[in-house]
Image 1 (cartoon, rainbow, N blue to C red):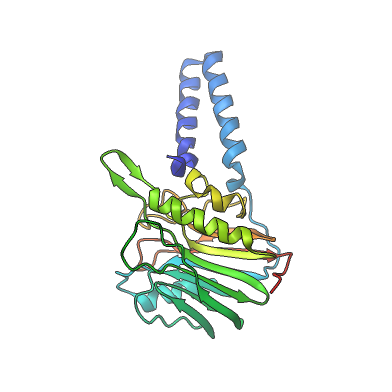
Image 2 (image 1 turned 45 degrees about the horizontal axis):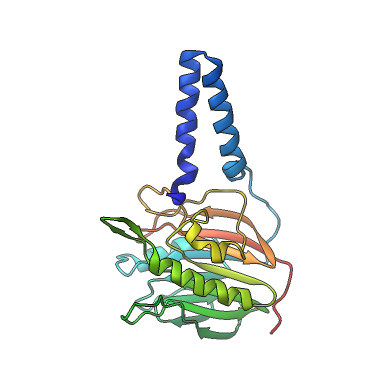
Length: 263
């Protein structure tokens, strides 16, 4: 349920309506308290984006293995004039017009700048026997770049099953903890930054304080499960692009890097 916390503004609106209708002190107090809590937790998303120049403009997108319009999808991604493009569900040749690329399994990184090194990373959850390659680590301009796709959250009769997703997040968090210097993390997390199961990652990384950039599902986005996060710098702006042939919306981030990786 943490993934839908920003939508509690609907409850604030209801409390406001009740306060206006009843004109009681208790109702107005309930509205003021709930509104204050919401603004404290999520009000940053309403602030204007930072307009400072970026070291990297990053696009994150779950390309979808059922995407019926790959060329059109790439055109949408390039509208942001990105320096880095991270894609998941890469199951075919994708012609992204950036000179450098690295693809491992079903994740890929395309870069305007030379990729100095690249390798697959193993974040396969324990207990999963099927072939599963959804992580890469690269270095671009001295900065460590990760592109990852965490397991899906499964709905069972007992509720949401996040065991595999959380195990993968824990493994990734340990890798991030060992890194020295700046890191840019790009990926489909199958959870929002408010999801406690992603704590091993979100405790180490930061994202933009402005802009909700909800990305899923594409037809009516209710949360941002596609993330661009930074350590040793900051995400100064974050927004979603228009719909593509995927069931996700692309997310764009402007990032500033303060510390270069030690390589």
